[in-house]
Image (cartoon, rainbow, N blue to C red; front, side, top):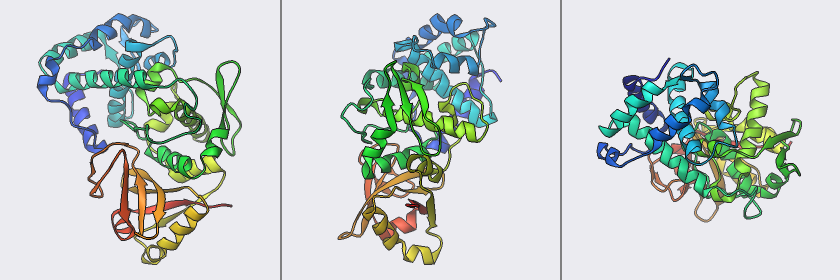
Amino acid sequence: MSLSFENTKLVFFAFLSVLFCDKIPPADAASKDSDFFDVVSANFAVWDLNRDGILSGNEIARALQDPACRGKAAAALAALKTQERLDMRKDNRFSDFTLKEFEDLRTAYKLGGKPAVSLVKYYNNGIGKIEKQAPQLFKYGSPHITHIRQGQTSDCYFLAPVASMTEQRSEELVRMIEPNRDDTFTVRLKHFEPIVLAAPTEAEIATYTDAGDDGIWLMLLEKAYATVKASSKNIDMVEELDVTALHGGNSGRVIYYLTGHKSKHFKFSDPLLRDGIRGVIKEAFARHRLVTTGVPGHCLAVLRYDEPSDSVLIWNPWGSTRLYKAVGMKMEHGYFWISLSDFVQRFSGITVENEE
């Protein structure tokens, strides 16, 4: 299905309702000049590998993995990939792009058309991500979660246990990724053979969740997990990160490959489990286990329990400072404290790493 102005608009609003994304800038934001459409036009022939005048999903995916695609071109690809994700959610296939459609969108952008304005927003966001990305594996020696922003991907189920691990046992995470002499990296997940990966490209950095100024460790870890997930489900995709970013997943499974341990899920709807949840949480943090929680459609990390206030510290992979409407709590860079009594009322349950 090729991209049309009206279809793009409908998909865009549907996507907003699902992921609670920030509001799109008003139409007058389009009065600001943008070179996004010029960049796409200049690179279209390079990305169109079979020269058929149509930029397909696989061609975009291959271009994303090209380290020679940098700067504005990489950010433009990221914008196209983000738009693809909206279309993928609608009809389970990637849309195609033509130059004619881009020219139509260029005209729509000048008139303040929201789909066109959205593409430019994704493009500008991608440029910002590339500029902020640190090239080191761990810039500060160990991983941190303060720079992570989930953005418009469906990988909260992956980010939540990773965030928990950075708080509970960050030294284990550091040992999982090793730089090689040929500028590649070896990632060692549990219950799977070592995975050798190249450093993320600028286009991948602009497209997917990353750790920004903290280093490239998160993207390497997520791409390694994508390899595991694709292998176990016989998924064949040109861009591995799509496996984690498109359709969501299970935090317990991520815990299994990060730690080698299975996990147990406790539903707060069960009165017997809810009554004993305080003891479960206290024991989990006493043993430095990974803990995640969730609401319908979203996964978060549980980082700490404070006994004097009988409250838990939660981290939302969105990483933003605003009201988290799903539970009525104000976040500061994704963090918020919530009393245990409110926690069991507003969340669906917790997933706790077992030691065996």
